[in-house]
Image 1 (cartoon, rainbow, N blue to C red):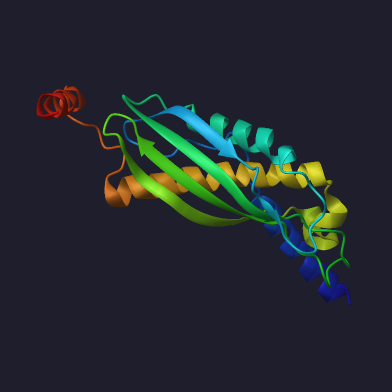
Image 2: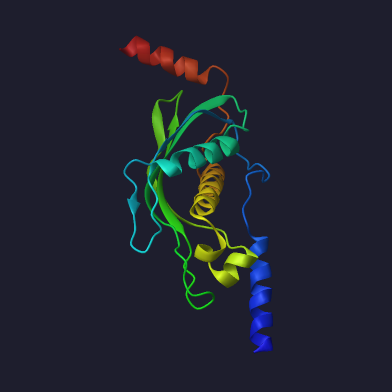
Length: 195
């Protein structure tokens, strides 16, 4: 029994080290600068077993987290980013250790290149789980956190995962790569001439 408790305590400590915060180091996003962020939660589905939560309770936490993470980039090219909350499950109180479900959300992400007038990503879907702390690992999220704390934690994780995904796209696909000076203006002028 002592060995089991020691193991659980050790796992809880390791899990706590992985908790996400809003002020983590910036990623490499090239010439990215956000022009507008949109957060839509009106059509979010509440999944079975979830704690009750109105869609309006999600909007401000997600908006604040996304703005905090993305507005710190001051590149020379503007992009719009939208996040739609599609569904959620806020873990209810369960039986500690034996049954302690984790809160989760599904979001769709849209990234729009303002100068090029085209979407880099349209409806990219992501499944995101809440971080585990030492307390929630042992007691379960539903016992260790209030509904508001669960929503806030998930909002931070949404912003974190969106930022990391955008950085991965920058590296792999060249998103947000600096364009030559006047490139966007020349493209707009050519479009106008052809029109």
